[in-house]
Image 1 (cartoon, rainbow over the protein chains, first blue to last red):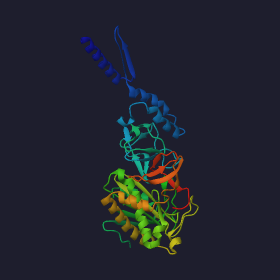
Image 2 (cartoon, rainbow over the protein chains, first blue to last red; image 1 turned 180 degrees about the vertical axis):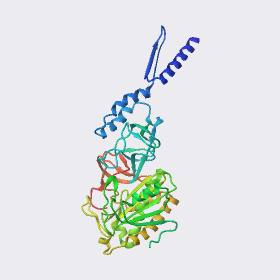
Image 3 (cartoon, rainbow over the protein chains, first blue to last red; image 1 turned 135 degrees about the vertical axis):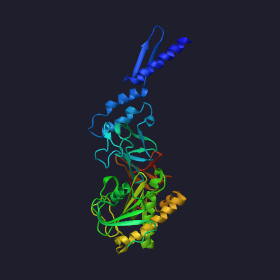
Image 4 (tube, rainbow over the protein chains, first blue to last red; image 1 turned 90 degrees about the vertical axis):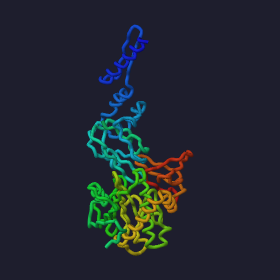
Amino acid sequence: MSKLKDTKDLIRELAELLETSSLSEIEVEDEDVRIRVARQAQVHHVSAAPAHPAPAPAAAPVAAAPAAAAPSQGPAEHPGAVPSPMVGTVYLAPEPGAPTFVKAGDSVAEGDTLLIVEAMKVMNPIAAPRSGTVTRILVSDAQPIEYGEPLVIIE
Amino acid sequence: MIRLPSGERCQHFVSLDSTNEEARRRARSGEAGPLWIVADHQTQGRGRRGRVWQSKAGNLFVTCLLTPNRPGTERAQLSFVAALALHDALSYFEEDLAVRLRCKWPNDLLLDGVKLAGILLESEGDWVAIGLGVNLAEAPENVERPATSLCAALGRKIDPMAFLDVLSLRLQARRSQWERFGFEPIRSDWLMWAYGLGGAIEVRLDDRSLTGRFAGLDRDGALLLDLPDQTQKRITAGDVFPLAKGA
């Protein structure tokens, strides 16, 4: 019983250590116990990052992002997620062929246009709800989207 | 002098970049609707997805700025409210025009299958700008699809301000119908005038195009497209072209 409690305490300590570190997992081994703590979401977040940096051709890294992020914790739960206020079709650029409003890695100020959602020929520019860095763009150009679907993540 | 429904205002400009752009500036500076912004000439008239809207003299270029007390998810319904108001206004000038006018999804007006007017809505926060371009006097030239004018159909020119008189009343009537009874009567009236309903259509999206049968209008205004593989697709944006002739 006390052994089990010790183990639980050890897990808690390791989890706290993991939280405050930049590590993605910690594994410790004793004579009779082996404990491994890892963070799922962060692992994917880190692995998704290299998909973004290449800025040229604009559409490619953006389109790659959702695929890389898919298996991880739902982006909708991410505290930095900006949800779509309506059902519609999303555009990353003001018109076909134009540069995108934002790309991953960009700093945005509150109120900056992130993208446009079109619903039945009503154009709705989606403004950044807060300042920060766009870490992920979760949608691709001209993609249909649902109400509440996360569009981008600002951290 | 324009006679507007009570409580509505109008600002008339000789020239503007775009009436929708002016509406946006007004809305951002806190002005509330209903406010009509009309220009004799636009230097940067725009259509969907960055397209240019030619501004021929004698045509109507107007935007109605509204601050509707409705959730953002219902805004798209105003596209159909506006199309019907424009259909009503155009029919006012000659009764038998009504049956020759069709609404192309979501909100272009066609006369005998040829484009007569276009509508582009822009929305942010709590406001919506309904931009309407009506070829009263002259059709634009060198456009991708042929266009026509009301003058060509009626044999006489309607003054833009006289047209706005009628349009403002019709839009108020359709808005009040929408506010009191919801989207359903708007939807069924729109379907009555729908262009290409039941027929084969092509829907051009930014990055691809789809063909199928125009099956109807969903509860939120999305176009229902029956695909060849027996599935149905909801379309919320795109340009519709009937594949067979006729409406």
